[in-house]
Image 1: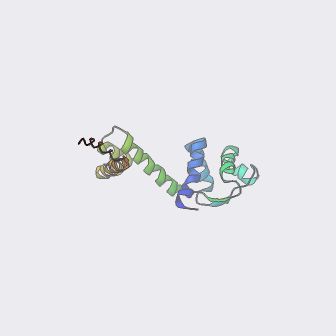
Image 2: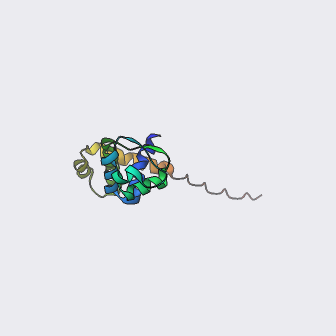
Image 3: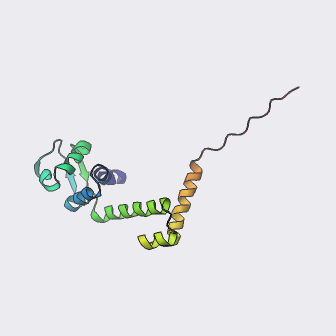
Length: 135
């Protein structure tokens, strides 16, 4: 399972049931590799609850999955929140830095990278058509 797949477990649960459900999953099974049954039931039903297990069965039924550790999930979640604030809020770099425990220079760096990525993803303007030659 790749690193992106690793965190997709948390993403799938968060998207379906919210961050509290994801926190519960990680509290119960964080850092572990678990085998997801093909049907809802068994000891995972008791440990995780029917809602979380249903989501996992629908997406990962019959697979072994790695549940992110608490620390890894927390880092990923905090980085996503920082990125969201840096790119989408009207807060100053200093305010964002104070809120997230980073430097204002790092916030400026994030914003600069986003601007550069946005500029490079824009298609180049089409050149104006050349006037027809008349002879």
